[in-house]
Length: 162
Image 1: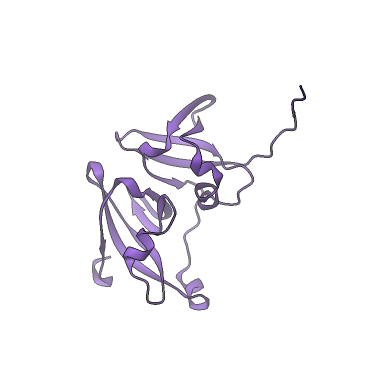
Image 2: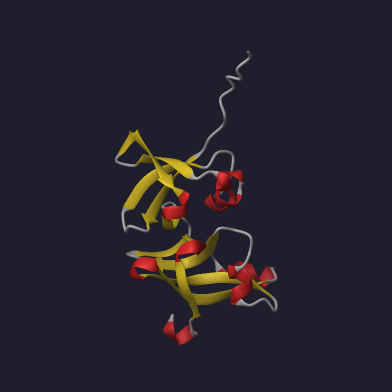
């Protein structure tokens, strides 16, 4: 029996992960060959039930988290998104408040295309809603991924309320 011992390439990024039990992990997540966390979440890794993560305070300590129990996550080394980029695309940033189970609230922007509605963005084939320029806990202007299974409601926000 031949065993392929080739080492898979990897890329670890710092992430903050909030679970539905309100526990929070500051961790290193191996996103493999993917360029961004969004690519990782949309990849075949989505089929995995458990994600291995390394604790940031002790990288030698590995734990496995259930992806279905993730409330939200964001990369810690995130760069705020520039809305002027949308002038060249068909996307329109829409400001929303997302209320999740456990009384968690996140304010940010989602992308909608042309005549699309917020419901179209929520019903895409991804498992996470991507919010950019999000305000979550004590962080501002991060790109955040919220597990669709744990969203209670999404409400559009008027500019003056944002």
